[in-house]
Length: 98
Image (tube, rainbow, N blue to C red; front, top):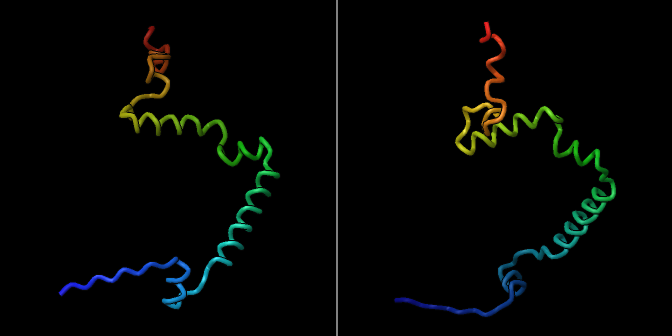
């Protein structure tokens, strides 16, 4: 035997019928708080803080980031300086002359 029951109601009506709490007030308070914090962060944002937030290690992290990108592209074993043909032979030094 198969019984189908179709009930048309709003989410609020279903919540009340099942005895679940209404979270609309909580959502409103949380959204206001999130909005206030975002606006505060935007107001306090200056270029120096922005750079420090996104690049905490400074310029030396660029080499590490480049190594990660090269590894993802399948060039993981390559030296970032020679990956695109630049600086060929720079790592061998001048010791090969004599």
